Figure (tube, rainbow, N blue to C red):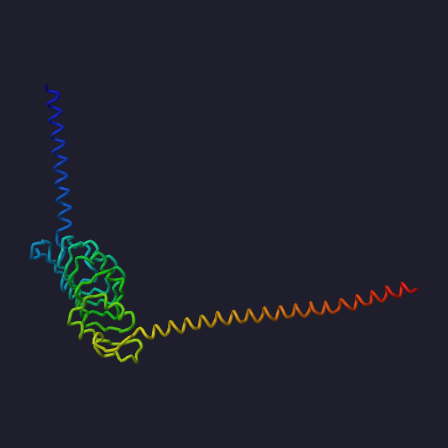
Length: 266
């Protein structure tokens, strides 16, 4: 009886140590996933969904923090020095509903910058940055209410195509001002872009595409005509030579017949 009891005791101790280690590891992973990023301030979000509100405002950040808790619902990165948003910057934040990137130096939103937020994100603030245009691939299906005011917009066909993909805040109707435009004589410069009547900046692109197609078609047509002319001339030359050859055949045949007649008479 002593041997089995000792074995059970040792086995129980080992199992207890393994269970204790597993609990500690779980707590560490949970803490890493839900603890607040360094230098930022976190608080529990209001409402019944839980999650955190994380404030990293006015910290002179030049990059987005890498240790944002996974359960963050509201993220404030305003009044920093961010110049770009890389792809998949918020991909691991499935509960993020509000994102404030205002008052930075943002000039570039890379394709996939807001990937993973199409379902959760409800409000996006990009106001007071250095954005001149938008890449539709940056939003990856995001339809959040967006504030785009206070940027030096370059109004062109690309921007006109991207804006309808966003649910813009009413303030953006008068706050998206064209600092420059393409074409420059479109009448968009200095006016609210979304309120400009009968403004189609894609017309020039369509005309350019049409001209390019016409030039290409004309080039192919010229090549075909040139080939046909060469083919006809080449065939005419061959036909002329063949005709000359045929004309020469009867005379030779006549001389042969004449020689045969003379031989017969003799």
